[in-house]
Image 1 (cartoon, rainbow, N blue to C red):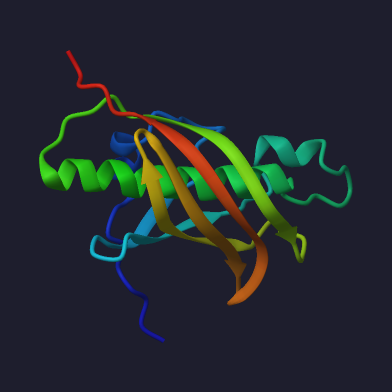
Image 2: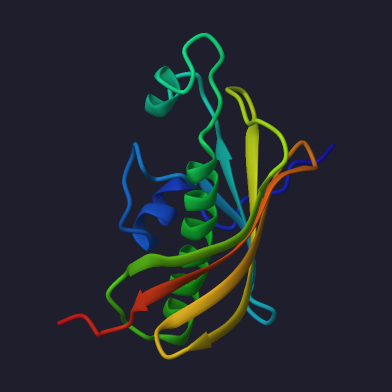
Length: 156
């Protein structure tokens, strides 16, 4: 099976997002469709993730809130890439404002490769709404609708 080359590597993700490890939850962006505003990102879960030591000792699983945060970071990366593509210089900050209709379907464990899929739904002013799905091995492990506020003020 041929492996698709990512659109953005870890270094480029770090240029787009203000987050840093251990709270940067996106390793690479696989694709962005700037017409439909869909994005696909990946996170490889290792046994060394700091949050796994306490969640849960002897049976580590990725906390659900981290899966939702990874979706939000994926959506933010798409938004900031879209601004960059349009030549709009913005302060790259994005904060969750709401999470709805969350479902966790299966635990995510060390060794799993998380695939985040986020789709832009609508916006009003600086507020943006998205749908998101998290998959491992092609199987949905979580899903949510979420909103965020983008700091769109120009950089000085």
